[in-house]
Length: 226
Length: 313
Image (cartoon, rainbow over all chains, first blue to last red; front, side, top):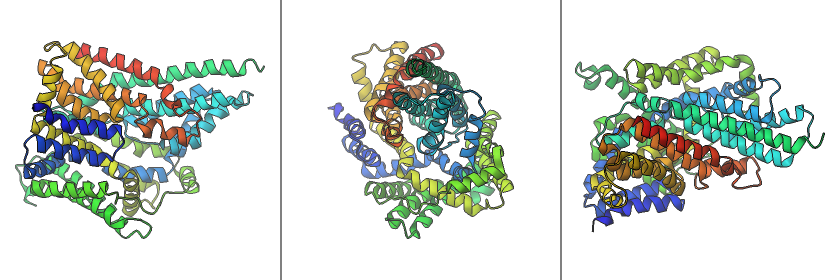
């Protein structure tokens, strides 16, 4: 019965799917796998220590935090919003797209500018609705809901596909560590380079799709009023 | 000390170890700040968490593996028992950040971009990229001090401790998943999955392997809500035996598999942080509103990446 070795994987899938405590899932899966796979407890604890030390690179984000908070304190968010508002005559879709591009560039440099709570709600949504009102329309409620959805969407898309360009990002470090476990050595620079077309395409797809979507919604909600 | 004075050890290895010692010190500082924070509901548990991980990060190289492992288990236990909590909120007010912006202005982008820039430059000239990240952080701190003399080391450390306390134990997920991956490998889990999957997909066809691996990453991430958890399992079970074993480029295929996983993240309510929490923060009516506008981009990106993987493998 070799299949019993898969018990640990089953715990991971079910555990995450049922939203149990992530660290609890990992520890439970590790102990179960060791137990059914015939790995001794001392060996297991030693593997924990050895593997964590080998993967300390994944904690590099903590060093970056030395300046993340202080840059926020020194007005990074305000500077980003000043940058977006430089675009003249923008529609909501263009404001969202501009944020997507800036978010993507900063993502590649591993810089956050506030996310949904810190930037999108207090800065981006007012800018996007302001763009609609500047054209003399009262914001339509359905349109506002879509503006919110697309703002959160571009935040995710730009961040996901661009953060992998940062040399030393968590994702690439996990890939490097996973491959090292399997006996393959890979460079962080190669991992970032392979993602360049993905990042550009990802941001382009998001920006163009939301721009078209916003344009269609604008026609639907405001043209008849005139 | 012999480690740092020895001529046999490359400079980058020594510098990297200094980077780790700095990270460990930030964790230990976070532990001490929380320990004396009267507003923290669980000062002791929080201090145990950041203190034990800090010791492993800073000094793990010189400690026996058994001790490192025990400290990681202690760290995990304090998180599982929900004894790790953020303390006093020391975030700057909107007036403070606005006043800073009026003084510093757009110059703030220079330190923001210096970290990524130096990571890239170090990687390109063949030095250690993470040492480059550390150097970039150093440059950013000097620049920030130049902009505002109030930016003393204590400000940086307090802000780092504040951010670290906010992200909490979740931030330790990637290294812990890597640990779990090495336990899987040790117990031979990959061989078992490979054996099962091998009955359904023909061995030897790399392209079929790539499609199964990429789509599997998307689906597994949708089920688990976490691409980092999925990549560990899928690479051991499918990526290694059905794609890498036939000579595909590991850097390209596995890295792209991770971003195929991100397509899954865009599609699932399981990734609540990205797709459900924003609905609440933005006062939206449709609980799945964010996911709905992400479906088309996610599918386009998945197809794009599968074709790209097959082309460059």
